Image (cartoon, rainbow, N blue to C red; front, side, top):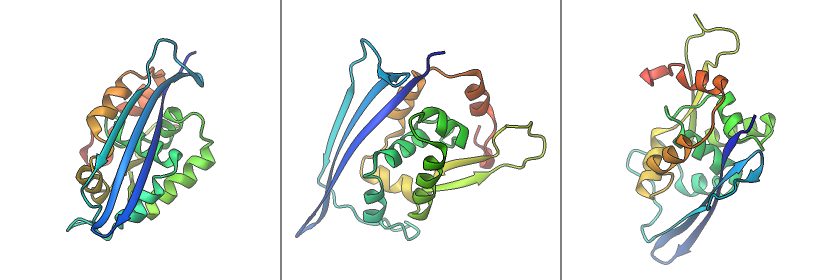
Length: 188
């Protein structure tokens, strides 16, 4: 079986100036097949310098934008956020996070998700386990409202771009079934 994955490399530079904090973000996407670049696929690169200051929003629920963006300087964490943003329901299960990030060990993935939760970028939601079959996911991960607001204000992790990339990923029947499960809060 051939698994097509999306490798998302991101470089974020945060600068402190006399007039505030500025950032510059470069995204680089590659399609990899079983860990190797896919023949004939050109990597996508997006660069977005932003002159807007990185500041907390009015309703940021205590999210520190500098701490949040600093945590994302780790490629693995940025890939996890990209997976959440690109997921068709914006709330993948751990099984789906593992599938879309095959080079990350399950325990390492858990550690990174915990760190993203600690800074307020990600939250877990659980559905009632009644009626679930053995092995079906019940816990899902989504961006917090404050994280989505921070990303929107700073033109980061734009959902349409990530969803287009995810539409090209080859999925197993198991992952298709996991994606089809209803999420809490009416996410279908």
